[in-house]
Length: 235
Length: 235
DNA sequence: TAGTGGTCTAGACCACAGA
DNA sequence: CTGTGGTCTAGACCACTAT
Figure 1 (cartoon, rainbow over the protein chains, first blue to last red):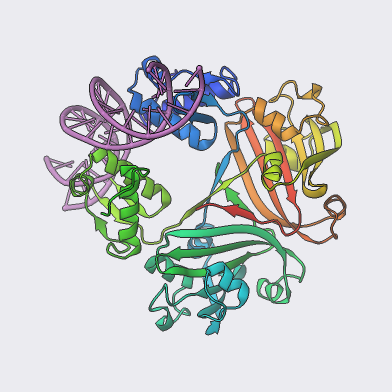
Figure 2: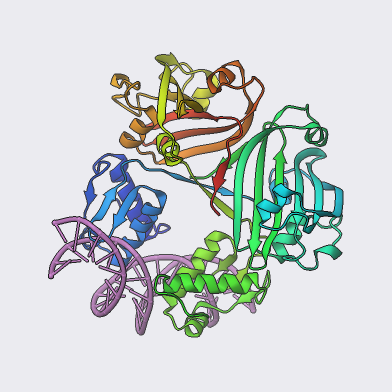
């Protein structure tokens, strides 16, 4: 193992070295690698440190670990990607643009069937419906179509989201325990097109997210990004 | 803290309890929480165990941790989502469908400017260009447009991808060190539409991925999913 | 049954940044 | 300077599962 710099932890150095051995095919897909005790000796580390490193690689998908069977290099690694889903305002300001938003609607409304299903509520439950456009330097960045469940977010009825954006208020006040998140592509309908200042039929990246706390579904939201938007993932 | 079942680790129980305190707003956004030593006593655990739990919550975005300043509940948590990008064949077979694929082209071809840029190669570098359609029960699931760099994946010239699918061969033989992954939406062009048996202009979810090892870019691929496809993320 | 990973612990030292 | 998290260690016991 090459020397590690002072800014790299020993566990991280082991991660890097094991990854290198796999990438350089010193350890081939399917091979069994030495057990933790053996590697601990080879790397001059405690077993707990090796364990931590190998668990990271297993999470990453490069290793398969089983008690008694040992640790093997994954044959068909299904690698993972992580998406950070930032607060829209921070995302826009992060690119150096000036953030603004416009609330198009905020009103009580009974849940239609599809929304009720997503939120695991009965059809017709009274929710708060909001539509918002988020702008960067005055150009539409994202349109948001949101339903909020007052039963899981008490106090929401009293908030005026013209002043504070709903996402931020919810995130600050109602952290979630669980979320359903899905990405898809849809053609802009007339309303999407008008709000995003584009043509009807344009392909839009859609993010749908429903969040839950112990009182049930907090909110479900459909975010439509401006045409051409790319969502970048980190491996 | 409620009793933990035998199948939950002590660290995980601490994660759950801290998350509960945050969700139930016993600890509000911005609050400083007790330090590790204190929590270790409260939870009857070693500090290392508490440390592990709090690090998990920090990764999740719920806590902000700084030396000396202590651990605070994140004010605007930018929560993360994880996507597992499986082998297409496994993904299709996982839904109970029969997998098949058709290779439309496999030929040496010079890299055009955009591909060269993505792969950090010079324009005109000789690559292998492949187009493949992946089917589930005979219906198009995904079309793949791939460029492979023989310099980083030696031996690729000799493989006949009519027999084994390129993704699997690469994944099995050339694990990557780094990947660029992006999602977007595009309107189906004439070729996409023909291959996916849909109409031109239909919105398609696009995944672009470029992978690198220590020899440089291995491959870059554009995957276009069938219309209506939803990519599900796990929080 | 025995070998392997999973987890915990007590203690230690260190690195960083706030007071 | 000092309180806090970051990391490592040696040792221990446990839980799974391949043999």
